[in-house]
Length: 160
Image (cartoon, rainbow, N blue to C red; front, side, top):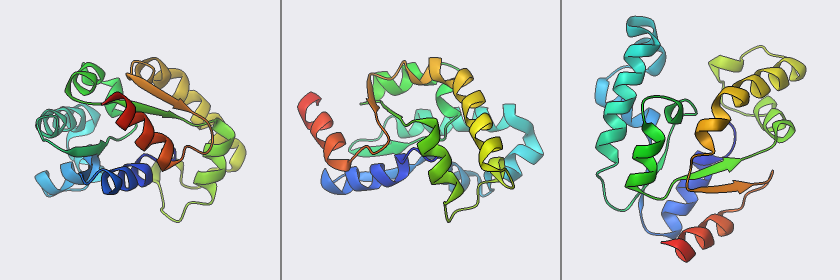
């Protein structure tokens, strides 16, 4: 959350003349419900099963850039699927930079709504303790607080 995957994904897709897919939006359109509705009606397990199903579907598409939700890599063998199906990149942004981005974000995010900067910092650090082992299975890792589209384009072109 807040690392720039949607912003970078859209820019990368434009630069490489590909289609951008936000997996969460794709899932909502496929099931005609919002993610909060799916969570409320089916719980996290139901949501994660649906998420896996749409991940399997988009993994078969050609010429796409896909941004997943932050939890997607942490369930089933999703990281293996992503690595086997394409060019998987972990955008590793520092906690302080994430806090700054999320505190000033124009989009309201339910998981962090109402949190102070200190609470948000603790929340992000806690999430990363659990998620980092999955994220670090990505074939490529870009680290830094300002990952530029040009860096990602170069990485993709040099290794694709």
